Amino acid sequence: RKQQSIPKAQYGGRHAVSMLPGGGIGPECMGYVRDIFKYIGAPVDFEVVDIDPNVDNDDDVQYAITTIKRNGVGIKGNIETKSEAAYVTSRNVALRNELDMYAYVLNCKSYPGVSTRHKDIDIVIIRQNTEGEYAMLEHESVRGVIESMKVVTASNSERVARFAFEYAKRNGRKKVTTVHKANIMKLSDGLFLETSRRLAKEYPDIEHNDMIIDNCCMQLVARPHQFDVMLMTNLYGSIVSNVVCGIIGGAGLLSGRNYGDNYAVFEPGTRNTGTAIAGKNIANPIAMINASVDMLEHLGHHYHADLLRSAVNRTINVDRILTSDCGGTASSTDVVNAIKENANLIANKLPFK
Ligand code: ADP
Ligand code: MG
Image (cartoon, rainbow, N blue to C red; front, side):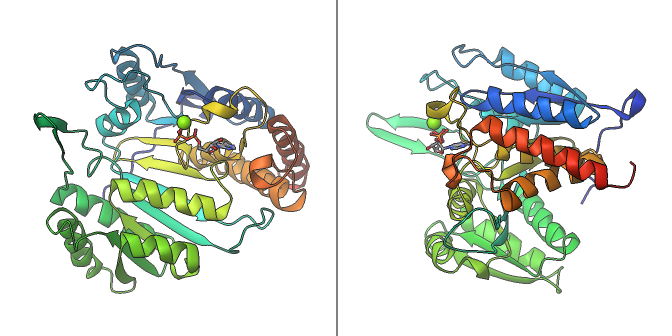
C-alpha cells in the first residue's frame, strides 16, 4: 500500500489544517479545540470553512474540498444538507467521495472512567467509505418503483481490505472479521467477502473470519470481546460504528478517521450533528477533541498528541469529570477546563520537548 502522504510542515514547523465546523454542536466543539490548541501551543493553524446548509448549490463544498486538497488534512463536524431536493446530495458523502477517502477507521476503546455494561473493549472498525449503499444512485424507474443502487467494486473492496490487514499487521492485532450479508446479496457482498478472503491469504499471521451483519449486531451487544479488527461495507459500517459507540458510552466520546492515499479528515466517530443539544453547554466535547488528537498524531506532532491524549484520559478516568451523556454532571466547558488543567499538570512533569 502506498504510504499515506503527510503534508510537510511550513516555516516554524507549523501545519495548516482545514476546519469545517458543520452544524449543530460542531461550531462550539471546534471552539473548544482551538482554545485547547492555543493553550497547549499546538503548532497548527486552522483555515475555517463554513458551509451554509440552506444553499442548494455546492460552491461551499467545492471550496472546502479545494482547501483540504491544499492543506492535505482536515477536521470536521457533521455538515447538514437542509434541502430535500433529490439532486442535492449529502455534503459529507460528496466530500469523502471527491477526496477519495476510501477507508474509515474507528478505534473503539473503553474508558475505565465511563461506566458501561461491558468493560475493556478494544475494537477497530474499518469501513469502506466511498461506495456501497452510499453510491447515491436512486431513481424512480416507473411510477411507484424506486431503485437504489449499491455499488461494490473489486478495486475499492481490495483497497479497504488491504488497509484493514495492513492496519492489523502494523498495530499488532490478531484477527480481522469481515462483516457482510453475502447470503442475500450474493454478488455485491459476495465480491467484498471474496476479496477479503483472498487478501487474508497474504497475511498468514492474522486470523480471518467472517460474520453475517445481523448475527454480528447480536454478538456485539452480547459478547463484544470476541472482536478485534472489523472490516465492512459502508452502511454496515455506519450502523455497527454506532452500536459500538453506544456500548462504550455514546456519541460523545470516540473519534473517527477518513483516509485516502492523499488526504485525511478527522471527525467525531458517530458523525452526529447534535442539533437538539447545540448551544446549551451540555454536549460532550471529547469526541471532537479526540479527533484533534488523531489529527496531531497524523501530522507527526507526537508531543502535543500525547499531551492532549493523556489530559483527556486523566479527565475521564481519574477526575471523572463527565457530561450527562456519560452519567456525569459537568458542562462542556467544565470538561474543557479540566483538560486544560490536566495538560498543564502533565506538561510540567514531561521532559522538555
Ligand atoms: P443525527 O445527526 O444522526 O441525526 P443526532 O445529532 O440526533 O444524530 O445525535 C444522536 C444522539 O446522540 C442525540 O441524542 C444527541 O443528543 C446525541 N449526541 C450526539 N453528539 C453528542 C455529544 N457530543 N454529546 C452528547 N450527546 C451527543
Ligand atoms: Mg440529527
